[in-house]
Length: 151
Image (cartoon, rainbow, N blue to C red; front, side, top):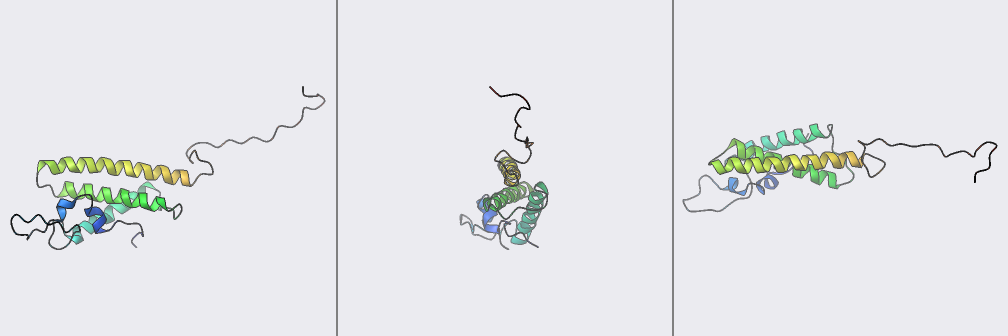
């Protein structure tokens, strides 16, 4: 079952628009379709496999589920998966050395987005604003001193 927050082909293409140039375009035509389809490299089907892999990676980082609330968690998950898929596509289909550099930058952005998501999911599950990874201490209210009058 596809996750409701999974990025679309267009959302991944937003990060790597030059990959959406049709392979059968006439010379000098720099028109970008801004999505993946049968005439792009990778095709829409191939890009979808990268997206599925990226969604699985995001789910693995957040223990298998992105909470429904707060709603910004799904946006963070979508962004992290889109960046991961874009980085993997750039690395899998390099046309020039600069594509590897773009892949490395997208990879770092994907890692940063995933770290933000993990932190936000951790914070969303905690009663306080400090996050669920920190201990929460509580003590009973102090009782009056027996036989002594506090000054």
